[in-house]
Amino acid sequence: MDGADHRYAIILAGGEGTRFVPYSTPDRPKQFLHITDDKRTMIQHTFDRINRLIPADKIFVSTNDRYTNIVQEQLPKIPKQNIIGEPKKKNTAPAIALLCRLIDKIDANAVTLFVPADHYIDDEDGAVKIFEKALHFASRSDKLITFGIPPTYPSPDYGYIRRGGPLGSGEYTVEAFVEKPDVETAQNYIADGDYYWNSGMFIWRATSLLSAIDAHMHGMFNLLKNVGVDDDGSISRESIEKYFDDVESISIDYGVMEKANNVVVFPFDAPWSDVGTWKGLADLAARFRIKLPGIVLEHLKNNS
Image (cartoon, rainbow, N blue to C red; front, side, top):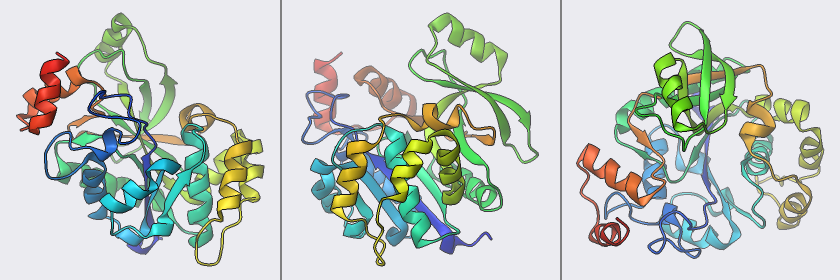
């Protein structure tokens, strides 16, 4: 099974506007702003990138309840029912698990790509090739795939992935996920050569992730079984609210990836940034000669 018909994507868009104050606000956080150019917002760039691989009707967005209208406005090609509003902020695992449950009910052979809405990738063609390779791998495997960014400096701001042995086509087993280190430890990681930044991007078969949820977070799995998916592929509002009321708040890294023994890391060699701070944005713009929007330049001056 390796057909494009079984490919789905989920954009995680739950950020709440704390990264680029005062430009970003709780009503319009970073993912909905023009950060790196004045033509497309961060979430629109993310959509454009994955839409090269996956049709719009198979792209889903998980976001805060308050942002569903903004998502519809900025991504009009995505069906309204594919935009899932979270009534409570419960970290990444509950949202990812819920979308896998939904997609698995739609297509038992589904392979799902999960990407945050607010990452910058300089080489779009390179990113698409990496995703294509990983989608192909996942379609023929029960592995949980994560993407590791080759570190370009000893950052204390990212978690790290320590790779194990090679699997034959450029991907590696994962020996460990490592919490954010101090600068000296990060320097040692870079010197070692076997460490990546943890990108927060994933690919797996929906059934594989649900099996991992069952194995490592059985309480969450039981809650998922009670979520009703309608024949048209939608989830009732009542089911969503009940699920988020009861589910544990936990990241997918801590809840599954750090515990599972079937995790694989693909090096993500395309230039990447999570655009996390004003300084980081300034450095990014200088590195790639990005022409930033005027309003962003003004805020950069005020926050330098």
